[in-house]
Length: 315
Image 1: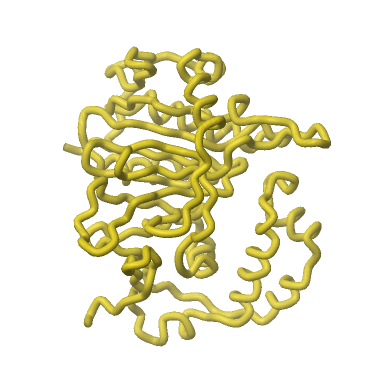
Image 2: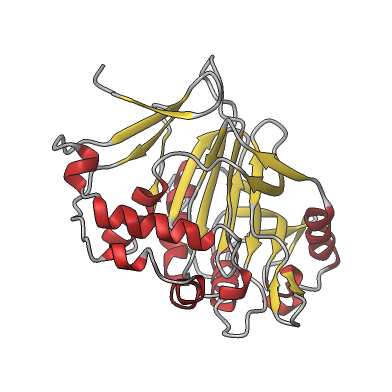
């Protein structure tokens, strides 16, 4: 069944809220729906889980699909999540067998990437969680929230909405009176099938390389997880080192935030250091350094401590 094929709105009931159909609900009504408001409050006041092992962290511009019941014997994957979503939106979907996640940063990427996930998590009903975006002054978040609602209300799949923590529901004021997001990092527990706020102290391997892939591919999202191997896979791609980026690594926090963020006052303390690490990586590394002339994917699997370690698929 090709579940990702689109249908005209109104032919099928597709969005369930607290078990009831809501075909024609608009964004403003959704944001004040009692059940939706309560679920957002539950997330925001619920447990903050520190994630340091046995987890798959999905970066901005990435998607992943994993088994809910991992088959590996040593150290199965326990958590899947994403973070640092200010104006971005994190979408988690699951049925009884698989979970998919995508970290969306623009509305043009919605259909392509959710179609990929829904085609693999097939079924008549999929549980849905959305978190991210806020009432930012530049209106960057709104097109994503609106685009996602349009997607879910025009799909032929029944989506059981468990969380819609976006826009006004995910907005607070900082000490300077500026709007900022309440929740930026979330994690899904594969065992309990629950979503929680997260603090990621470990985000996995090759983060700068994965960021470069996103930009080098022209904005194509990386499906980071090989479901068959139960491993992170970074496919070979061509990029050149550029020593000019070394100068960018010396820029001030203010300049980095101003030019590299859609919401500078909302970024975590690690943001500028992460960007400097990326700039330094661009200045010193090219595809020949990383892939060593093999033109083959890099693979990483969980070891007995729950950390991702590289392995050679051919061995």
